Image (cartoon, rainbow, N blue to C red; front, top):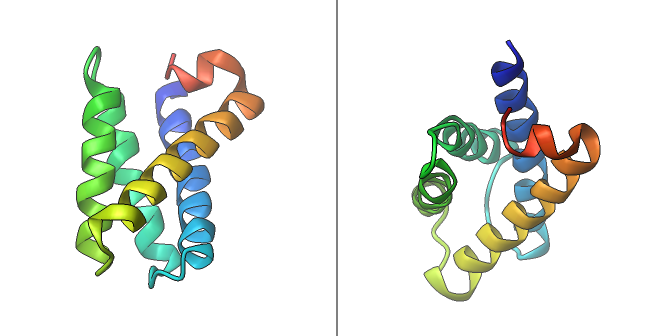
Length: 102
């Protein structure tokens, strides 16, 4: 149950931050698409050991699918900003245990 809450919290926070970042970067991304990107990345993130790396790759690939943005600088900066800010927010909301998924 705790794992499901972590995935939902991470997806909603990451989706919101990604959507806001896309508006700042003038990229065409709807909120529902941003949440779908974040859900996909959050689900993959729970894989032990390599989940964090795979989640960044999934995040990037899904974001590329939903936008027509250039890889550099738009997509890479969106991924970096969204992942870093969402990690800080999830850490603030749930502590280090929520960030690590446990």
